[in-house]
Image (cartoon, rainbow, N blue to C red):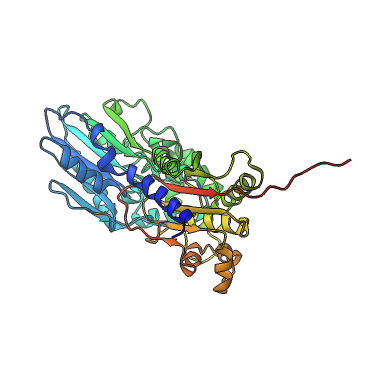
Length: 430
């Protein structure tokens, strides 16, 4: 690896490492209760969170958490179930039903510890009465391809669910509920992390219906009637059943970016965090970031090179082609096309859970030779971008980043390393 690629990969590795449950979870654990301790949860990091909880919990506990296929880890007292992500399956449905059953009949002396991380929405697919899993799967696929933001997708999910939008916490009443959250969403809004199964939701059925209409998503008549009637309204903030429900954010994208920034500093490179909640169409964000990087390289504005531009958040991809990809490789391919081989600019974009889109590929790393490598393989980069084929493109030029399940998830990680360029003096004339 070149110095630039090694630096970028080291920053990504540091971002993932600082978000590991073993590092961030123990100090947020509550005191043991007088009664039972029941552990429930869902998400790509939930199994590792459960293992860390077992290692640090002094008393009795039992429970069930559900994670993505391939993300299970061995636990002694907490059962680990696996299910599909990002499109839910029957295993997730079964796990959601069992989790809801586990919290029935609890008392005021009992404690529920809920372990939630990104991916929990798909892993807890318990449809509202009158709907079935097939409907949820169909709507989920349409939302994923529509270009809707994560907040919009989760608003719809909450209002078609029997467990999300505060319903899980309400089912635990009158027990105390402590939710330990790993954020993977822009702004760290608990209602949008796994669609907020244990927190109040201010959005409405009308909001969910408007989102479906905005993106032209066709739904069965039963869904339209359900939302129009308001019968599937979520649990609202201030509901008395949530009075003993507490949310504790244990790590988030900003923390991961700060860890990456420290790696850059130690290498003698000045880091700049542009934001931890950047959203928008991935290819459009790539174009904007390319313009910023060129301005830094050529003009020293708004930052002097050498430097690293760091950002996180969750972009979206509107599916237009039939290629293989995810939002990180879509962003990176757009960035590389826009840079057009500009010297001295290198970049990485990866999903911190190790999976960009639906494949076990975290993302990729590029340098100024990206286009040259592609043309050498007789690959047209613009056609690859038009076909949403980021994974196919980067695999062909040997630029993919594959790290396997990271057992955490703090969303997208992007870093652009910019070296200084010779500047051309500019003057104005009459």
